[in-house]
Image (cartoon, rainbow, N blue to C red; front, side, top):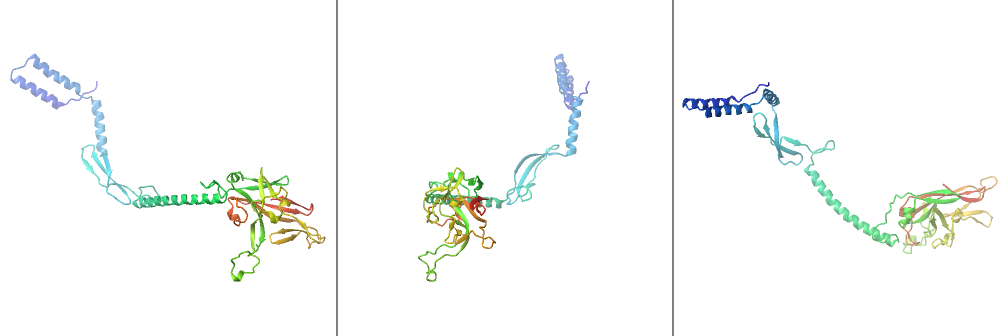
Length: 348
């Protein structure tokens, strides 16, 4: 049977009360029963030795830890860089309470560790928010202006900028003697059209009617070398991925085509001069097919560089079209003259 512990002070109080009754010679069965019942009730409330042992173990553990509990935490002193907190505690053994002002500090964030946001960072974020708001207004104005420009160029309805990226990638391949284009369908859907370019040396006629006295009488502009537009929007088209070229003569490529061809001879036209020698025009030059340095004076193999790109539909004569106008990459290909077969063919 487990040993019980009794509150002896309460039991002593009952005995003292019993003695007072005895002194008055007033012992009756009722009084005695009352006293005994109180003693029995006290015994019923007594804890066991096991309970006392457990409680004592808890007491010793708390005493050796000298533990304190945090009862509340509040914001401490204001600081521009750190967050300071003030905790309130109570001692578990004695019940003593105390407040530790600014004893908990959360340091400012750095590039090396997380932490509290500094006041300056809040200022920077507010400035950034105002800058973003200004940028959004400017972007909206720019979008409206670009949409209006595309509308005037014949692309889009003027309510929004056509959804197309300037990094759209297109490419060509040669199959069954014809030139095929791929990666262009989204460009066509957005209203863009193909243009063809040649890598040439070129100088255009000088036609500036407002030219200074020093330039009056000048016949040609400064010579340039690079990608130059061949014809206009009417010079090339794409049908079912097949590239087709206008059959108009070179000086008539600024008007709609009278017919279309997939043959390379449509854009490289060979002519025979009065000496019976085959030639073709290339930029500002007239190229002779015959190799005069060879022993037999045979025709030579020639490779010509071309490229296709997409841009807004701009009618001839409005602006000069260059690769800077393109909304796609340049899909480059070559046209090669084969002297063995005396014919032109596509190549990569």
